[in-house]
Image 1: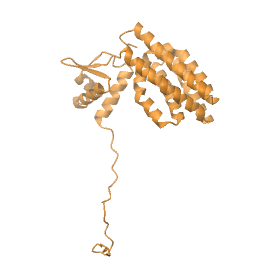
Image 2: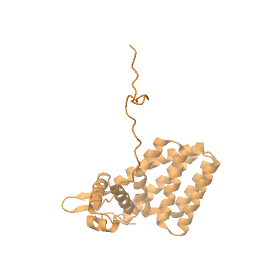
Image 3: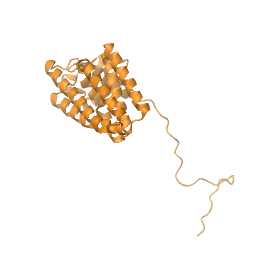
Image 4: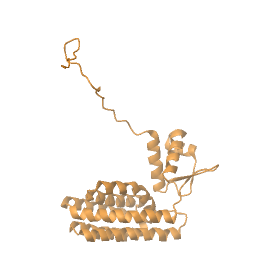
Length: 242
């Protein structure tokens, strides 16, 4: 059986089959996402302190938005563990327990030790130089007594090592805990101070030498010391204040 050719009135072949779908235009992130991200950042930096009462209309006025996206963001923050919703009382910034912090920082140790090992195996001279630049940024923030820049520099150096590992699954797993690690790290950033950055320097040299086993062990020791320091400070300041 011969299939008939379908043509338009002008004699041109008519397109058959599924219609072509026009590409969707990229849209800016919804306002509720921007509000969510801003509130998370305010919690991480301790602008909103653990245990602090979060009042919708006050946050809306501070952020220059209506109460609706704030309400939606608070619900999501509650689902993600950043905020506690108490019946008849309202929303409060979550106060981490020792068990929560210990579990997260233990997982971080395992993931980052593996990322450092893989980074050392594949490191290029250009990547090592960038690590050293990030190290200099951290040392400058330490010298300037700039706590927020210190936390940012620490996160940037660790994130770059993860990128160097070339393992996307590992990167995704570490990325999923990165914000909360920053939250726990900020109160102890200055206390860890020079020791942490001396440990970074030793780690970078192991990466530069492609000493993968040594790099993994140094990262494990480095993250374990951070974990120990967090618990020590937590017992000194139980409210979690910076």
